Every structure is written in structure tokens, then in C-alpha cells.
Image (cartoon, rainbow, N blue to C red; front, side):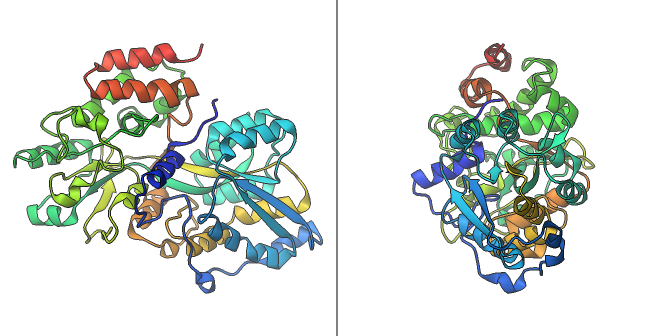
Length: 451
């Protein structure tokens, strides 16, 4: 499994480079933090007494989450510090995803790392430096998360870390006012989504807008489209086989998934609303892709919850506001496949104070405290009180994560080898948008898979 930045982190960085106004902080990245500590649940100090006297002990945390997103994390650790007398030393590093592996191989590990990809987690386990999670952490994860989340932190049958934050990608942005004025209904199946697209197109309007330009990472939004369609048409088991290359990239199921994405993205009757023709998708930045919704020249834009940050300052992101999002529906109304990302707390020490801190981070108590201190942070922890979440789009994400019918799968290209997920998949997706056939596209990606 290759090491590389996740698409979530890539989008945050790109937004900063372009000087975009982040009016709504990014999901799963933390945020500017409020001081609503008085609203936080009380912490039970008794649970840590089994670890003895921890006063004066230090626990180091290493992560790619930096200022200002680090502030809510640091504040959320204080109740643990007050209970135990231990101190948590937080180190944020933009080069984390490269340096953590370097440090692990050199034996210079932190006590705990916040790891943003299952592939990187496995690489860290392969160094022999990562420690299995304490049984209390495993019990909390069994209680508060689904089996799919636990599986992402399990390597060769051993469990290594509780999930932390989460993000949701299976969303479609729209204008609530446009829907109300035209009597449009939120679709509950893929067929209904197609029917809605046809209904809008019949009025002489291009319903969909999109942009996939992202510097060296141009093409990545297409991979999200394909992953979502793979989950919807073929289900999570086949999706897992595809990501692991247990079935070829150019086998029937992935080919059908890209074709399904093409029914929307490459349909000249559907795209590119307010921006040009189909090929204009390749030259439109992903940050600009959904903005025509505000001008009324586009009605639908498939993008993750973090896209809220790309609308201009003052835009009301709410179900009764200027823009909002609905769940990208499954093949049937009963199915709830969910594409997204997340982070995991992995330890490199089994000292008592580190175990105690791991347990704290695996509780619903910590999840609620973290959410109450952050803007734009959510978790898949089932014990998270939705009232602790700061804004409507993140509340929608929590509702989807906590829906018992939801089946979560991690972003596929972030799990694939770098030669594919960070290279050929992006590049061939761009060629596909500009005219290359689906068959040539999946064939070319398959031929790039490391032997």
C-alpha cells in the first residue's frame, strides 16, 4: 500500500493556496473551535485509576492536523489531563504523512499518531512499531462504531486503533429555493436522480455542473464519482474486491460504474451548467465546479461535505438557505452506501498513560467534547450527540453516518497503490472526460497496476 496525501487533505491545501474564503470549516478536519466547554459531557475519572498514578507522565501525539484546527484537539485533551495529572504534548506537521513512516522506521515514534488512511496504518503496522489497541479500546469501538470502521484499523486479524474524525463524500449540492419554486423532489433512488436531471434539462437548462482541475491531482473528482457508482451498482463486497485488485480494474463491475458516472458527467444534455460543454469539466477547478448553483445556471453538483467551504462568504448553507446537499441515492431507497474518509488513533507505546489516553479517545464522551469544541468536525461514533455538531451540513453527515442502513466504505483511490490512486486513475479520468472511451480508460488503468 502506497503512502501519499489523501484527497481530503489535498482539497484543504488547494483551497488555502487559491485564497478561498473558508466560510464553513471542512468536515473531519476540526475547526476554529468555540469555548463551549460548559456544554461538554462530564468525564468519568474512575476509568483511569486502573493505570495507577499518572501524574507528571507525558503522552506525545503526532498528526498532520495543524493550526488553527489543532486548537479544539488540544482543548479536548484537558479533561483527561485534569483527571490523571498526565500531560499531552501535541505536534502538528504538514509533512506528517511522509514523516510518520520515516520516524517509525527509524525508531523515533510518537506515543500516538492520528493516521488518516488505512493504507498508511497498515504500512506503520508493517514496520513492527505499532502496538495493538488495548482490549478496552476494542470494546469501545465494538460499541460505538460499525464493523466496517473497525476493519479499517485491523491488520492480519489484530486491531490497532479507534477511529477519530470522519468525512462524507456521497452528497449532491443544490439550491433549496430552486427546488421549492419548481416543485422538484429530493430523489431517493438513482433512477429518480436521472428523472430529476431529465426534468431540469427539459426546461432548457444544463442540470449538472462539475470541475476536476486540481493541479497535479487533476481528475480526482471523477474517481469519487466512479467509487460512488461502484458502491451503488455492485455493492460493498465487490467494491472491496476492486480496491484490493482481487478483480481487474477493467472487469465488468468497474466498467459499468464508470459508464454510470458517464451518464451524468459526459451527457451533453446534462453538463456543464454555467461553465461550458463536457470538456470544460477538465479545465474547471474543483473549487469552482459547483458555484453556478448560486447563479441559477446549474442545479446539481456532486461533491463532499467539505465543499461548503468553497461558497462565497455570507452564503447560507442550510436546507432553507442558498445551498444545501442531499444524499446521493442508492440503486434502491432501502440501500445506503456511503463513501468517505476518516482518521485513526494508532499507538506506538503500551505504557499505562498511553493506554489510558487511547481509551479516552475511543469513548463517546471524547467525541461529544471534541464536537462541542469544533466547527466542522464529525465522527462516526454512534454516541455522538447530533446537537453537539455546529452546522447543518455536518449534521446531515452525522445523520448519514449514524443511519443503521448506511454501509460505509473508505475512498477507494486513497487505498490503491500510488501508481494507480495518485497517478493513472487521476490522469485517465481526465482523458475520459475529454473524450477517451470508458473501455480504453479502464484498460489503461488496469495496465498501470503494479505487478
